[in-house]
Length: 542
Image (cartoon, rainbow, N blue to C red; front, side, top):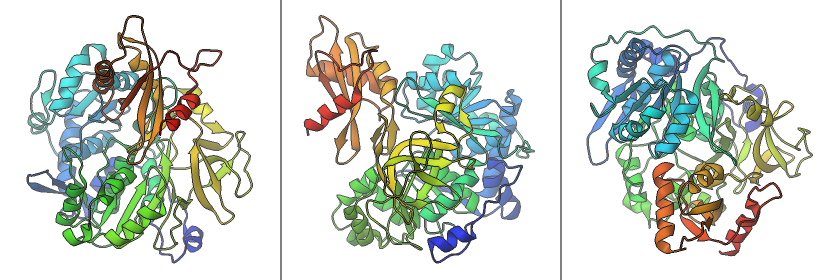
């Protein structure tokens, strides 16, 4: 945990990394606590309109031990890849813990993913097993013949076609499991991240990634780990923001995590959960905050007892900061990072004043600078690339089976985030924009390439260009410019059909909410879509 400090300068001066040579995330967030305090509350599952179930660290150790033994019996070995295709629920937590304890590599997967998105990720990673629910099992059954390395699918909802009842099979195995002895640098998690061209890349992280997250997580929650802390986020645990900004670091710090999967997120439901579960800490993405801000006089309708609220994914303005102070009685802390190198910048209201429009200062332990394309550091107040110096414990090991893309991510010893920013003389970092075409929508980073590839598979589509169009609530929405094949009529019905085509195959958050039919797309001499022209066009439509 971070040392006590009354200023950022004092904190930075006191902080040093303490990284063990041997480290296992599964053991650190479960077994270590279970050995000391087996009855300590770890996880609370608040079912929407249903019961609330509490799990202790002892429970998580027992359940993850049974699952680890089951996976081992099915031939899963250290280094094998295990997909976790589940929403926020207890099985999601102990599936990750079990796989990590046996030395396997977990792959968090969005339940929003369609068949094509799942097929690509599971095939690319060579996943050997998947833990899912009935909805996920139905998707997997349709693509199972295209995944020769996938030998086992367990379903938390019982037997399904192509999937076996997880609980029934776990019941036959012992709870005791001897964790595999992993090094801190051994592979632990692959999180697929969207780029600007082609298919997503798998960011491979080592077990040390959890320790690397801690300074930023603790700062963004005004020193998370205080007595009485209890955390919840609406962010999906398949996203790095849910998994490694909330679930895993909270369990490591001994902070109970509330899990709740709303069928549909609403501001009223969020306020109600914050009250009913006595939440003290919350990561609320900007889109959630904007929805919650639309509720009139929430402080008169709900009794809240929040100690910290963190937000990341886009810069918060003065209006949201002021609303947070009125509504929650605290200053919302902003943070910044990306899948390859997360939680590297943060504000912390306990030791520094918020500066609206400024995302914060480098989280202690991380060397974050503004550099040019060659990796040369730029003077203060100069626009350039937001970069992080290696080695850094939160930094990815590399892209899964893609050394060329890994090399392109670096300029010398600087990892280039792909975002541009400005750093003041006193170290405050301001996000300016992306230097690529990644779309930020409702907190998700969405690559246009995968959507374009999907669009042109529709029988009526000849060419497609995808960009983000500014949107007040979602930051951006996915907008597609489509050239139709000869004979296809540009109708509203066809636009809806094409949007649904993407929604089903990729993900519910990736489909184009707007489609414009055009006669031609702006292209480079090599035939690439010039997305900046399409972005400019979409902005003119505002």
